[in-house]
Length: 180
Image (cartoon, rainbow, N blue to C red; front, side):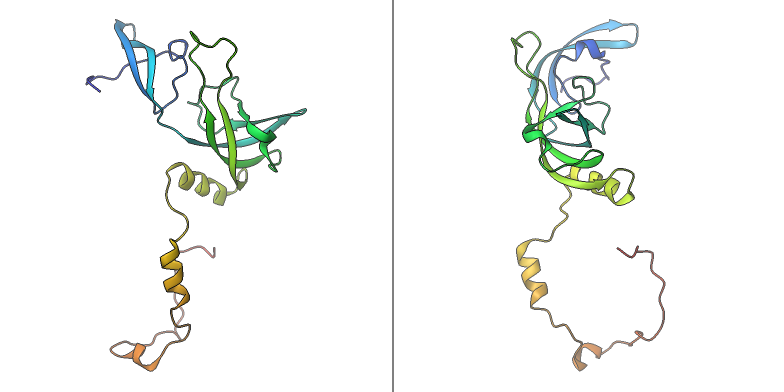
């Protein structure tokens, strides 16, 4: 919080810190400017991540989309063997266990997550949009009160709806919105 300069932290000095975490660091002037070592993770900055479901024999894991997620060989262990997720599907997962500091590891596991939702097939543009929405915590459903108001809205236009308006429904329009 008190540094006005960027601090370069090599992978070997990140310990269990993930991108977005708030950390306490020790710094020094190095080859790449100010360099540092993570001494302690103060708070976690990430609770969810997206990735692709992979299977290796009976082992099911999430291959994170974000290369900044430091995990065991690019694999995040999944609780409950990934549930109903299939090989190659993209999923949103919630982190349920963060890695324990290597100094205190003593057999403790690494990063573990639980699949919250299957987002779709890899490579589908809709899946990529769903990933961005999920990671940014952008609401993708309407609140109950909005859905209730919509259910009570009239389905047909009344004559009073045309007051002070020009009816152009018979003319073709071009829209930039996709069919979906």
